Amino acid sequence: MLPILQDKAGQPYIDIPYGREFIRVTRIEGGNNNTAIRIQIRDENGHLRPGPEIDYEQVGRLFTESLRLITSD
Image: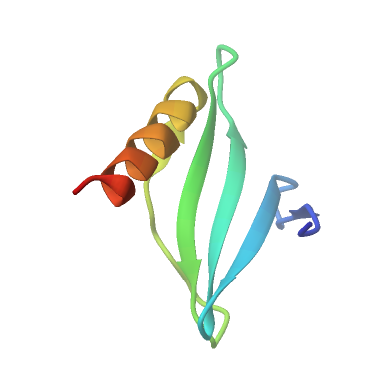
């Protein structure tokens, strides 16, 4: 299990190894109880590339549909 860390803004994230880079998944707390995750790539030099923010209500659907896509013929 990967450790949950905190970025400079105090937001929790996980870095998932992906070759020589990492996929960073960060929990973003927005206003009006709007929680989301941000998905970014952290390259081998430590630079983060911008990625999408996905509302927490859609996270399950994203992964379910991704798995369905991977397993389809």
